[in-house]
Amino acid sequence: MTDKLDRGRLEISADECKGCGLCIVACPVQVIEFSKTVINKQGYHPAQYKGSGCTGCGTCFYACPEPGAVTVYRLAKQAQ
Amino acid sequence: MYEKHLEKPASFYPEYPRKSGNQAVTHYCPGCGHGIAHKYIAEALDDLKLTERTILISPVGCSVFAYYYFDVGNIQAAHGRAPAVATGIKRINPHSIVISYQGDGDLAAIGGDEIIHAANRGERLSVFFINNAIYGMTGGQMAPTTLVGQQTTTSPRGRNIHNEGYPIRMCELISALEAPVYVERVSLHSPGGRAKARKAIRKALENQVQGKGFSFVEILAQCPTGWKVSAPDSLKWIEEKMLPYYPVQVFRDKSAEAESWAPPDVTYSDADVLQLIELPLEDDAAPAARPKVAEQYRNPRIKIAGFGGQGVLLLGVAMAQLGMMEGYNVSWLPSYGPEMRGGTAHCHVNISDTPIGSPLVSASTVCVAFNKPSLEKFEKEMASDGLLIYNTSMIDIEPTRKDVEWLPIPASEIASQMGNIRFANMVVLGAYIQKTGLVSMETAIKGLPTFIKAKKLIGENIKALETGAAFVRGELKI
Image (cartoon, rainbow over all chains, first blue to last red; front, top):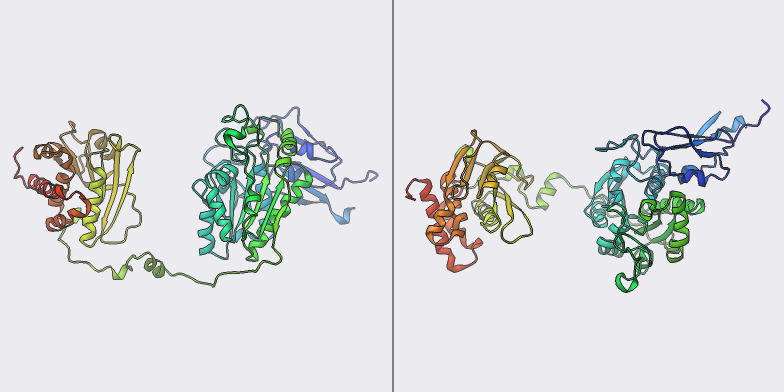
C-alpha cells in the first residue's frame, strides 16, 4: 500500500440528516458536502462524506444536532 | 482497521416511539441547538455511568418531548415548574441524578419564580437552561431573553426597552444568590464554545454526583427557524448578537470547596405512605355503622353535569360531604369553564368503602344530567346497570341507554313551584338519597349547613330535599 491511510473515517446516516449543514461548516478539513443527487425520506439533500481526508477529529459529531446522524471512526493504533 | 470513535450515545433510545413523524429522528428543526445540547447531556450520562440513576424533567416548550429521546427516568412538568418537580423528586430520591432541562420561555418567563427559589434553596440539581432568545415552539414570539431590537412575531418592530424592558440575564441573577455552587454560561456557536459546553454539562452532573448543590448551565443555542436564518448563519447570529449581551463565562464555581451532603437514608414502606397521607391501612378500614345499601348503589362513581349556575358543583360537594359524614372515603373534582353563569359545568364524585385511587370518574355508575347536552354527552360513558337521573324539566328526549336504570325527575319545575328554581339541585339530592339510601335523611339534614352557607335558606333547602325524596316515593303530585 503506497497511499497513507486517512486518520479518520466518517459515516453520515442519510435518513437521519436534516440537511442543516452545521457539520459542513464545522469540518476543519472540509471533507463534508451536501449530496446533489440523494433526497432522503425527510425531503432533504443530506450531508455526505467526500470519501477521503477525514482526520477523525469529531468536530462534525459535536456540531450535529441529530443524535445518531454522524458516526466517527479513527484508524486503529496498530494500523498506523 | 478503523474503530468507532464517536457514535450516538447509549443514553438515547435506539428509536423514538413518537405518535407521529419519523421515529428515527428528533422532532427538532434542522440545525436546532436543542439536539446538540441533548447529545452532550447523553454523552456525559454515558461517560459518568449515570443513565440508570438519572431522572430528567422535560419542560414545556420545544424540548417538551425530551422524554422521547433520553433512555432515563422521565417526567414532564407543567409550564415553568420543572425545578419544583425536580425538587420533589430529588428530595424523595436523593441518590438519583435529577436534571431540569428548560428553555428560556419556561425557565425565565412563566417559571422565573420556580428557578430562583430552587436556586436559592440550593437544591442539589443540575439545571440546563437553553437560551435562544425566542419562543420557538409557539412560533417565534418574544421571550424574556429576546434581545433589544430583535424582531419577533410579538415584537415586530423590535424589542423596545420602554415597552418590554431589557433581556433577562439569568446566570447573573442566579449568581447573585448565596446558595448556588456552580453557574456558567456557555455557547454553541463555535467548536471551542461547544467544547466548553460539553465540559460545563459534565461538571454540573459531577457536582450532583458528589452532592454539591445547585448547578446551573446556561447554553446559548441557535434557533434558525425562529430567527429566520440558515443554520450556519444562526451560529454567526449567536456570536454577533447574543455574545455581546450574554457574556460567556463562569459566574460562580464553589464546586471544590462546597460541602458534599446527602440526606440520611430513609426508605418508605407502603404503610408509611398511607399513614403519611392519612389513608387508613386496608386492614384497618373498619366498616362504620352506615345505612344498609343495595348492592348496585354501593361505592358510586358519580358524574353530575349541567349549565353553570344550576348548582352542579354544589350538588357534588353536598354528596361528598354527606358521604364523608357517613364515614365513607370521598372525593370531589370539579370541571368548569371560566363563566360563573352559563357555560357548562360538571363534577366527579366518588363515595367509597375503600380508599379512592383517583378522583377522576370515567365509567360512572351514577349520572346526573341537568340539561340536554349533559345527558347526550355523559350517558354514553356510563357503566352498565348504573343509575341515570335526568331533569325532565329541561330534557325533552329519552335517554338512549337501555342498560341503565332511569330516574326521570322534573327537578327544575319542582324547585320552581317551591319558589326558587335554584333548589333543583337539592331536589335531586333528596331523590338520590331516597333512591339509594347511601346517606340517611337525618345525616343530610344535619350536614346541610356545611354546604349551604346562607342560614335563611337552610329551611327551604331541607324542604327541597324532602320534596325530592317524596317524588321518588311517588307521593308528589305535579
